[in-house]
Amino acid sequence: MRSTLTLDKRVSAIAKARARQRGITTGQAVSELALAGLEHEKIEGTNGANGLVMLPSVKGHIITNEMVAEALADE
Image (spheres, rainbow, N blue to C red):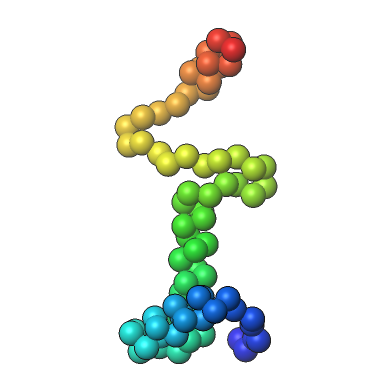
């Protein structure tokens, strides 16, 4: 899809350098960078619907409803 964008000078320079390095168009490089940012936000960001911070999971560590209820009761 064709669009006209006004990019920050740093973003433009990074996208152009990435495009040259990878042998792709600047538009493709901008798309890659934007998608990488969205993926990063999904992993470390907040849930936009309710503003909750999504913490990274710890393998083998499970939080149960009972544990949450106990923690809330301690307050």
